[in-house]
Image (cartoon, rainbow, N blue to C red; front, top):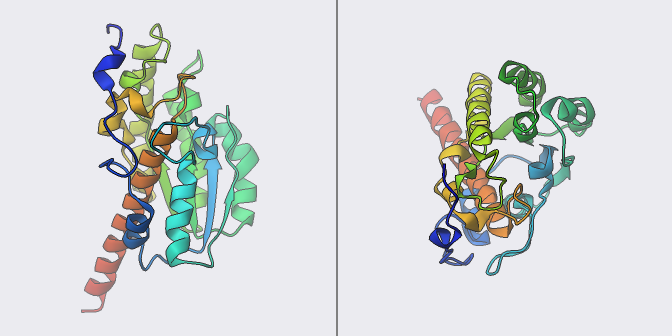
Length: 242
């Protein structure tokens, strides 16, 4: 794959006209009737919200967008973010699973796994086993949200020597995670195919993390996925009552 031409990915948007970003009022409207009042977030730097500013966007992590939308409809919402950077999935499980369960959540957002694909030794079977070990108990206590990984093709700051192999690994891990999430009836977000993955405008200059626009896009996709789950669950209740 050749060098990315950054000029090809000029960002014409700000938060107010970005089709991939929900404004606060829209997020609250989408989550009207949400039942969740205890949110816990587990994972790595994505969960933590490591970012950098982007002109035209609030300098906030994705979690702020989600929490604000939920709190607009559930003022009693309490939340805990256990995310810490540089952790593999096994380390997330070892350090965060028990505190997450002790929090007694009814909504869990688990964002991790990319670091499993960045090590020299890549073992997708082991990674899937760790997804199972982490996600299974979390899904038993409430609604679980997981997410695949953005395609790094549009990331001009990512080391080009490793871009192809990392793209393939993250695609494999995204598929493995989706398999586990579907088995557990978790809410899974397919960020692998999201259009913004091909744009430089979502990436921080460190080459690894999302910037303020990327944070807003991820938060929006989580809100929209939760809204879709509300619609599904409401339809199931209506059918059950007939």
